Image (tube, rainbow, N blue to C red; front, side):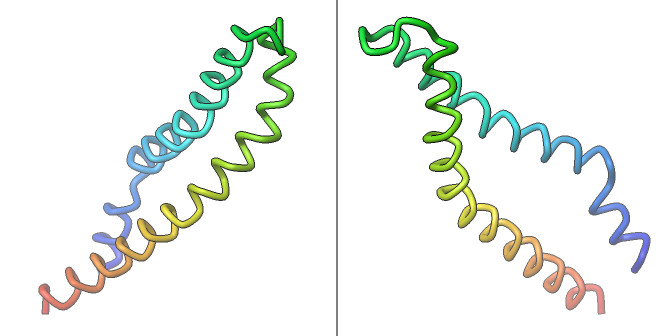
Length: 87
């Protein structure tokens, strides 16, 4: 049972999940900052990036927390289902 638990939470899967999380959070921040920099209100992408790091990252964190919680609960129920099937 401990071996199954270790296999399901292997380092490779953890790094992959971490990479996906970073891409999901970082890429939209740069995308929105780039869109704002093309407008006349913000001439430089780096000036816009400061504003976007505050506004967009806060929004992404607030919207991603329920998704992460749902995925975490889904993993727990999947583990419980696997445990019941193995009996």
